[in-house]
Each structure stands twice: as C-alpha cells, then as structure tokens.
Image 1 (cartoon, rainbow, N blue to C red):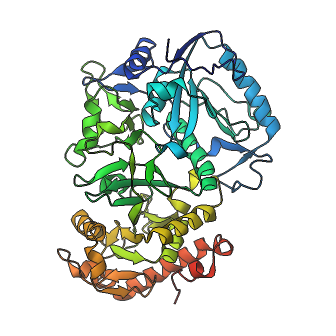
Image 2: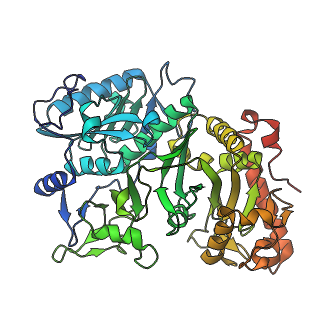
Image 3: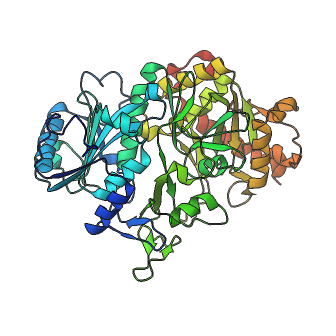
Length: 531
C-alpha cells in the first residue's frame, strides 16, 4: 500500500504487531469508525461521536517535561506545569507497552503549518479511527509526493483508553497530556476529547516558530479584494469567527496562524467550530457543514431513529463542536495563506461599558493590549452578583503559549513596526452602561466601523484622545451614530461612568505588573492612567 511511510513505527522504536492503517482518507476512516461502533452517521452525512466525560480541554492535566531544553525557554507557572524526565520515562514505558498490545492502529502523517518553509512534520498514532479522521481534517494534508518523502519530526501518541497513574507518572489524575520537546514526543491518555491533539500541535508551533522570528497567533484572518490581510485576535465570545467570516473577504483561517516575513499562514487545513445553538440564518456557511459527509460532530445530540440533529440540545455538552476541512467554507484562500497584514484587530467584549466601539492604537499600545488580552465576562447567575468580571488572557491565548509572553509581544511589536501595520481595538461588548444596564454593541455598527478601518477611510477622519486609556478614538464615522463613539455620553449617569472607567483602568494596571520588567519604557508608558 503506497500510503505507508518509508519510516515505520518500528523505525521509531514503537513495537506493534497489530493491524496498521496508514494515511487513510475520510471515506475509509468514516467507514472504520462506524463499523467499530465509534460513532454514527447523521441523516445528511456527518459522523456523530461522543467524547465521554471530557467534553473540553483538560488544562490542569497538561505537562511539559522540564529538562535542559526547556528549563530556561518555557514560561513556567500555572499554565505551563513541569514534569520530571523520570516521570516521563515511566509514562513513556507504560504508553509504549499499551501501544504494543493494540490490535488496530491508525496513523496519519501531516503538516502543522501551511507555509512550506515554516511547517513541522507531525505523525499522529491513534487507537480510534474517528480521532485519526479528526486530526487529518484539522491539520494540513500532504499530497502524494510529499507523503512519499515524509519523515516525522514530532510524534503524538493518542490513547484515550490509557489511564495514567499519578504516583508513578507524576500526573494529577488518570488523564495526561505530556509534551517532551527534547524527545519530540507528545503522549495523550485518559481523554477522548480530540481537541487535545489540535492544541498540542498549536503549542508546538508556538514554541518553535519564534526561533525563526515567526509570530504564532491565536487569531482568525481574512483578506480583502486588494490582497489586504486582516488578523483578528480575541478570546471566546468576542466575535473572532463571526467577524472574520465576511462574504466580501477571503477566509485564511479561523483559529491559529503564523506571521512570517512574507505571509500570514494558517496552521491548519480545517476548522473547529462551536455548534451549540448554531443558527442557519446567522452563520449559514458553518451551518451547511452540519449537512455534509466528512464533517465530524462531537457531542451533538441526534435522534437515534430519524438521525436528525438537534444543535440546540446541550444535554451532552455546552461545548459541542464540529470539525470540517476549511474548503467546506466557500470563499477560502487556496493555499491557506495571505500577504503580511495591513490591519490588526484586537477584539474585546467589555461588559463594563467603558471602552469605545473602536480605537486606533500605536505600536506600543498594541503591544500593551496584546499582552493584557482583556475581555470581560458578564455577571454570573448567582443571586446578588451584578458586577461584570474582567478576564485577562495574555496574547489572547495564554493556555497555548509555552514561552514568556514578552517573546510574543516583542515579535508583534517588531512586525507591526516593520510593516507599518494599523492596529485597532474593537469593543463588541456593552454601551450605554455596564452589563445589566446598557445594551450590547449593535453588530451593524461594529461591521461599519470595521469596514471603515479595513478600507482605510477611517484613517482620514478626526480623532480624539481617550482620557482614560490614551488611545485615539474617531469623532465621527459615516453611517454610524456619533454618540456611540463616545461611551461616556451614552451613560445616563456620567459620574458612574467615570467611576467604572477608573475601576477598569486599575484592573489593567494591576494585571500588567507581571510584565512591566519585561517590556521597554515606551510600552510601560502606553498603559492607561489612573486618576
């Protein structure tokens, strides 16, 4: 069979005498998954699977082996937790013993990264056919010629049936995601949530690419008719996927990208979209993927008789997901790449109702807000909790960044300066008061402001300096109610606005203390000012 790699598992030191399926395409993997009882076909063709008790990432079960390679290069702390080389050695021994006993294995040789000069060869070994289909869908698929010459640099072994032993392996539970950057090996056990594989590759590229001065980013990206690329940073719920899916622009990707000297390139060849309460009206392109063969739907509820889907039912998980090849979305970039960006959009959903709907940032302010990674959660459902809650996730993707945030921040600053990139902070959150008092920023106004920023017309208008944050705010924009551009004027009680604004400023200042010594004076001066 020509799909088999010239580098066997045995060559890698992995023993297995069972049946091995190499680089199967989607139809064969769907067939295998169904025949093995791993999932069911829905009425219109997608494969529906369940991930069991883990319906999302197990962030607390992820470890990086702490050794000579990583000791001084990884930002150790709450996010990046160390594992001793001895614990990893014991884990690897037990993993390989479990691997040797498997009757059937599925292997895929894939690329992490669409730009040939900056991609990494990753081999994934699975016990589940649907996991193999998932990762084949999500990463970049080599053509036949590339496959013939493929030599794996990094290997992921993914065995959901494996149970870690905290005492022997130094883990927190039976679940483990262990990354060994020296041995170029990632072991995933005790979880059937397929997103762990995808994020492991993202974490790998986030570690490797800065060494080549390539900026890895947790962002979506699209391109206008003139080849003008825009990138959208933003945490969950800020509009990253929605705002980048614009019919008038070409989608490069929805989640993970690199920014090199010559391109913005998608790390992936697929999309991984939230499915819960997905509306055909609001997101027709994504909705259409739920009716196609080749899509994998995780924890989506399906009628066992009619095989009809119920996307509104969250009884299995709130985090229901769909994985599909990027070319299932119309108007996508042919090579998952675009030119270096003209505009950077940082999205935030400010539930305090303080930030303007759009602001123009200097390179130093952009670095400040990138390192801050601010958004706000709305007040909880508990009785008496009325205040929004600020969330800061550095670089808009802290869980996936192995190096110190300043590494990514400095790269961003350099790249902005080099390319003369325009930077914008866009608030998709509240106006006219904080959550519970004001209202959500109208999406129509956000799109109009975004279009004006992207086509360059916004640059020609008049700007004022925001007294709290120091960035520039447009005074008027055609087609947008001018009142909305000055958040203070939208509050009925302006002194309550001033009080809330100062509260938010203080939260920013307190959060940034952890970075102050790692950035230069200009960035420190870009901080908001407390009264």
